[in-house]
Length: 120
Image: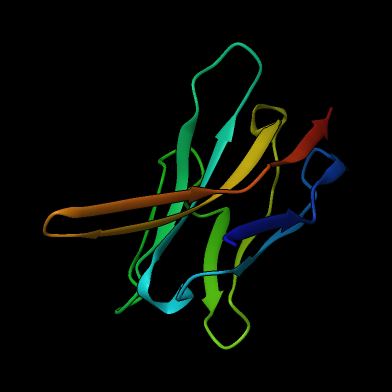
């Protein structure tokens, strides 16, 4: 059974930091690109950061570059999102996503989300 379980969300003041974790099980974690998305009330879900399976290259939304860092530990089947210098506009539900794509096959798994609230 595939599971992605996020943790680490909460309430933080402007300028503070949080570290989100996403523990994966039920699939070969090291074969999947991992991503963090977020969705604020009334807005569409947006990609925040991603890290590839093999070379572990990373990409970030412009709005979080220089403040957020995505990393993964394949031995622990876990992906992290370190969030620093948080702003009120970072308030959202953050979702972990596992993505696998090869010729003819595309798979996506999602976590249940964790709330991040940044107070001013």
